[in-house]
Amino acid sequence: NAGVMQNPRHLVRRRGQEARLRCSPMKGHSHVYWYRQLPEEGLKFMVYLQKENIIDESGMPKERFSAEFPKEGPSILRIQQVVRGDSAAYFCASSPSLAGTGGETQYFGPGTRLLVL
Amino acid sequence: QQQVKQSPQSLIVQKGGISIINCAYENTAFDYFPWYQQFPGKGPALLIAIRPDVSEKKEGRFTISFNKSAKQFSLHIMDSQPGDSATYFCAASNSDYKLSFGAGTTVTVRA
Image 1: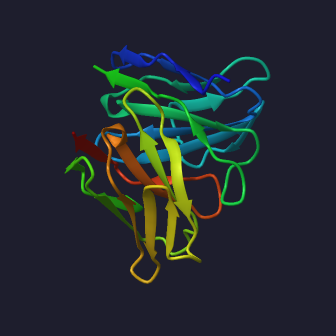
Image 2: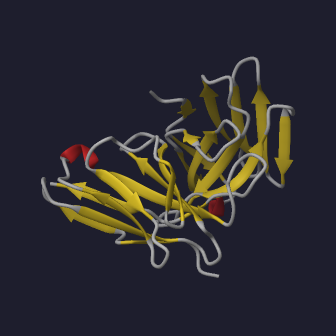
């Protein structure tokens, strides 16, 4: 069973461009979580999605960032008009059911390193 | 603000030695404290986790110690091996999926 897949692994964008990060969850997993890791900091929760639904986007910046998890295909994290402060590692995790203390573990992908020039 | 503070940033230990990583948290509502291990080019993987109703949990060479009154918890890696060389993240959550991570500790085990 392949693990969580993310692509691209590295992405370079110039200020003002758009960045699209893709996440394919593990087979049979319908819950996806996105985290961002800024330099010298820990991973921070951004958004939790199920197929075709955004469940919790409390960690997402209010502007320029959006996420989706369509019925078919990978989950997409989209950053419009990127700025240098968006440079970070973006990790996706998935679980077969709701993750939490009494629930499933989150399985993480290898991350996408975004560099904004 | 950083909800979970982790130290040290990096450490070097000789093969067979003990690696100790410490974490402190502020939110008293946290009730789940996992540790993740990450190898270069890979995503973080759950290593061991503890809940605050116990003060210690051991799995093989890995032990979590938990001090609820001090709001601190630590990971001890006994008999450290070169294969343990990785980045270790502590995390905490409030019974849900929103994990708050520490900044990570890079452990290097010298043969």
